[in-house]
Image (cartoon, rainbow, N blue to C red):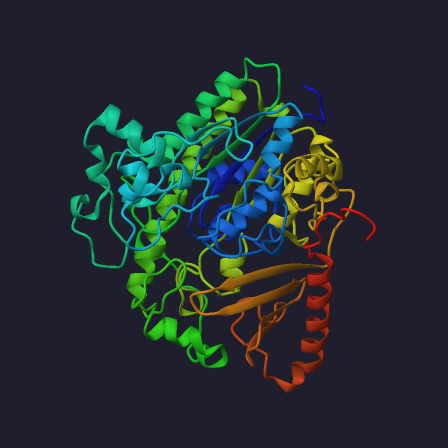
Length: 519
């Protein structure tokens, strides 16, 4: 294997926070295998998503573009198949491409009120409803550059795809054990919380690891390098890990999240509406407030930690397989998440137009023994936008040439790549590659457009056309409990951050179509 043509294994989780790892200093959650991965590589302590929702963030992972660039502005918007995507670039350059688990490049749901029997399955290839009814049996291949896929969309008892087909074929009606009415013990009544009765060896987290290991065994026999996208649907809500993970953490041992009484009065009005009434947001149903008692928050956290420990065990199995197959030194392993979760911070749950650290910061670990630094943690700013250009740098594929070839052939736009390669941070040759990252979020449920700039010591969030906003001094107030937006003493910082945000937005804009002629 050539040093500039490594195997690439991307391990992705759904809705996992950067601080929910013991290597990140969490006092309760235990992640020995993620710690082991971090010890063999570089962990980015300040890595951000560029949009805090699944589909926009995953589209950025695949394209290297901002949501403005790839146009997946929110959940429910599909990634245009004409877009240049990283797996296709690798496939054309000679990599064998495969995915296991969740993709979410097209919608998992159908429009409200639409009968699954009435639609063309080819137009809804990731629809859980169609998969569960047997109207779809496989994804069309190649799929966004992936030559083969072991598919598992959905969460909790809503899981489907190849995983559900396997479970039904091999284990009969075991899927009923995923449902809350069949839980190991009577649920407490906390929203989305129960102890799943399905045995852990039949759970989708185990299946994702098993299928990944099967692929590694097959790929080891081939002469070409491989790219494998291993995507766990957890630790996403509902919070329902199987035994023993459902009992791994006692709620009484869980510290309460970062919040203070009265802070909602200093934020945009919709924050209090979410807390007191519940409004339609991505990740939560209308009418369900986030005003939960402390014991409810602790139960949610305890079960989430159980899901993380289950993933950690299965990541360990994958890493062991790499070692046993003799693939570890030739394989670049990246661990990341598509976004995080509020988990009770600032009185909020799940995801939405909440540009707080708890939702925006994600795990980001790069490991390639013998080729990049080992056992290093960096506070340098990074984002998911940097994922694709870093892969290009480490594989030696010229990014401009690769994207031009793909895009011209599909008659799509030819935008610049706005992210930064993190290679210099991985080999220790530099201390930073950028002084800020941007986050953008168009939330059509509320009609809001958010643009956020994060720097080493501050964060600014603007709401287009609204008088409110957020400004935090991350050095003095790392938990973001004091909004300085209306503080006269912070006016200079507010002006400076606004100017920097405008510059960064212009710098990362990518709407220029290909020129057909001079005029």
